[in-house]
Image 1 (cartoon, rainbow, N blue to C red):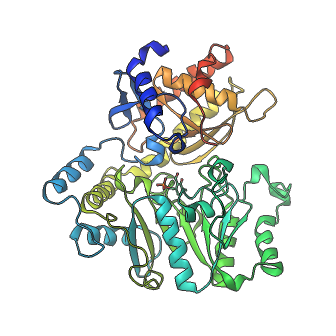
Image 2: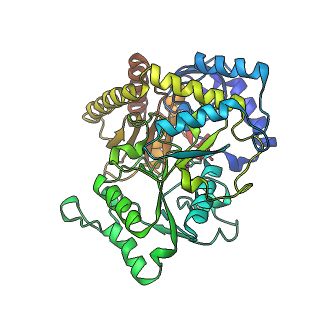
Length: 451
Ligand SMILES: Cc1ncc(COP(=O)(O)O)c(C=O)c1O
């Protein structure tokens, strides 16, 4: 186990960072300064090595610096970095759009619009939905996180710090309870559930929100930043049916869960729902800045130029990174691998939970796993979560948490079984340390965590 004296360069850099970078763009957990990485192993500026259970916030499904991606980027960089497709044309953006249309759910004609972040893609989904339907209102969900631009933020409802002092959001957004059964907002249990959360939307349609004025429902097929909560399939299907009946577009935000993360190409496929618009970001280009909307062609044709245009979006290097990413996911069978390793990790966590009561509910699909940390009374324990993540870092595991108490286990999909088990062993030791009361308050000095 490393004491803080094993991280001198890291600590010095964190201090420099604090003097010149705005703190609002980071929710830190510990002073990790990444210098390099390969696959599921990272190295910091002090030469310490870590197993990666975070994959750059689920943006590195192919791991850090996958050789195929690095080669594609390097090769492309030699001839053209980016020449705006806002005015001209370029082949890799077309090839990638063809591949994205083929791999996303739905066999109807589709088109793509590029951006640079998940947030701008969400803004785009709202624009396209409004333009296509001629309607203004947008439905999203409590605890949703869709991003940080004003549009994406207007659809998000998870953090007061993201709203405070920012003035009015964009009008026309309506937030409804996400179907989190473990904390059912209507006090139901599975046996007594009558999809009250869906009825809540229908009730709104009857009382104050005309359905014929609703353009789209923005839906996370797994509530990511809310703590990786999985909704019941019958809710998702009923929501999609409601959308279809009312002429409302169903938008699946796959920014965090897409590209094999959940053991399917896209998380919405677990629910047999075919969305009208799929929002892609993060892992699409293995860490290069790219996002994409893949949508029914007629929706894509509803906005006139230049209705959704960014100078550098869909640049050649990023598109080549994305093409290589798709190749790697297919050729290395990462979707299946995500399913298999996810099952293994959840199994091991369940076994650990038998001797460590700190481990509460564990849920997940593929390699998107939420492990709750609870106190002796079974209540969320943020303090324990903070200290355990800090100790994992000291012991060589990069792990973060969501909400008050959910360990966010989202390793790169290329992680080997051996690395995954080693990571779990580090987690077990950190939990033992916590139980023994040996994780000092220094853990709290660096950590804020996602709130
Ligand atoms: C579900 C979801 N949507 C959208 C976003 C925003 O993506 P970005 O941070 O690339 O703007 C995120 C980011 O965490 C996300 O998890």
